[in-house]
Image (cartoon, rainbow over all chains, first blue to last red; front, top):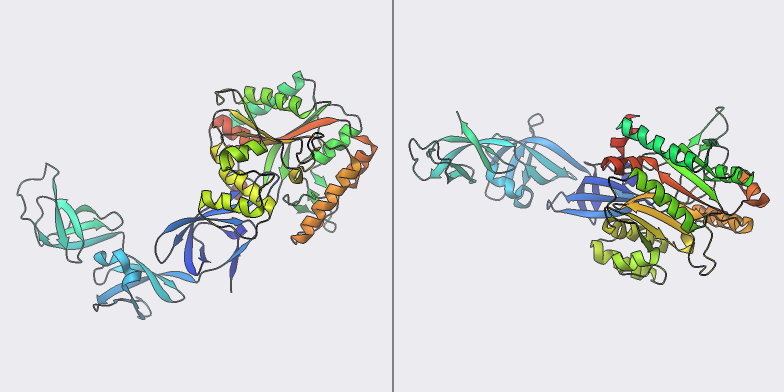
Amino acid sequence: MATYSTNEFRSGLKIMLDGDPYNIVENEFVKPGKGQAFNRVKVRNLKTGRVLEKTFKSGDSVEAADVVDTDMQYLYNDGEAWHFMHPETFEQIAADAQAVGDAAQWLKEQDTCIITLWNDVPIAVTPPNHVILKIVETDPGLRGDTATGGTKPAKCETGAVVKVPLFLEEGDLVKVDTRTGEYLGRAKE
Amino acid sequence: MLRQRAKILQCIRRFFEERQVLEVETPAISHAASSEVHLQSMQVSTNGMSTSYLHTSPELAMKRLLAAGSGDIYQLCKVFRAGEQGGRHNPEFTLLEWYRLGFDMQALLQEVEDLLTIVLSDRLKAAPLTLSYHQAFIEYAQVNPFTASKAQLQTAFEQYAQQQVHDMSREDWLDLILSFIVQPQLPKERLVFITGFPAAQASLAKLDTQDPKVACRFEVFVAGLELANGFEELTDYAEQQHRIETEQARRQSQGLPCLPVDEHFLAALQAGLPACSGVALGVDRLVMLASGQDRIADVLSFDFDRA
């Protein structure tokens, strides 16, 4: 079983805490001149996304988490699981709803996502930062209204609802930032 | 930044020149290592065979000079501490250390205040605050550092931080509470002196003759940043030898190497160290405070990652 000493702590390191895999977000070394040294870390639970603080005595060791990020292509959803394929080995894996989480609303077939594997099991899916989606449902466009800056909700082909400018119509393609859910602009085929 | 640092060094040298304190230099490489459990010496070899150590502070060598009759002395030097790197730590850093004959702790506190009032004149907006270690814990962590059990200290921390820390001794809990609960709440724009540390953390300070549970040791903080540590110095040879043995035993119990002790220092103490007080001040942190920087790397020409 691999372990890391607090001396090796840095952001991005994957460690095990209370049975769950965590990513170190921030590591702070704190030591009174004449006293015991500590490492205070901010860690993100890779399964739930929750961030918490932990304090270790410097020199202590923690178990390493076997976590890898892999680029994989999204294939389809069979109603229970989301299926992905490795672009080179063509190996396929299925991620459940807990692993996919909010990413589900951005998944478009053939887009490349980052799949986080813990002990070879998918625990998180990160969609591309930018996706191009077709509007499938929205109020009729207000022709000519390109200046007022008003917006309306539009439902996209993947299920996500995005605020778009008033002049856009059903069938239009839009570019969206998946991290913020914001409309970035119109897109061409 | 380089200019501001140079100006502060100049200011320090002028301060001590006016007060007729002699600038000295002592070896950075020693045959002996620090025996303190929380200070790890870096090893060097001067001839490819034997092991020597970089000093973690010039304290012992300066006390040899005092015992030899140097009178009041100060030193500005680089010191080296293994494993210390972070936002406020660099493995090598600049220390100002000075000793005043016949000064008690109070007199030295006044001198620290005089110096810092000059260097940090832009930063300090109110008169210094002096708190005892006991008061600081009661005020900011609602726990008595002298009487609380290990479990009570643990509870005090867990209530505050909502997290658990493992493998902790009673002294570790005190360090943790001071660092994570007390320090962040200290006033930002005035000097804070914390005095009267517990005897178990006396290090090389005398114990209070009125109350032997308390050491004549103080620390100086500005905006929660630990800036200096000072003692009314222990001059008793037998007591000093006993403390070194205790630290060596603690090192052994924690699996740390027991390294050669500075016998020259012990001999000097046996010959007689005059009554004095001394203090060590982190110059890089002083530059951080004077320039408003949060990271030590920002006040160094090149921090260790770029060294």
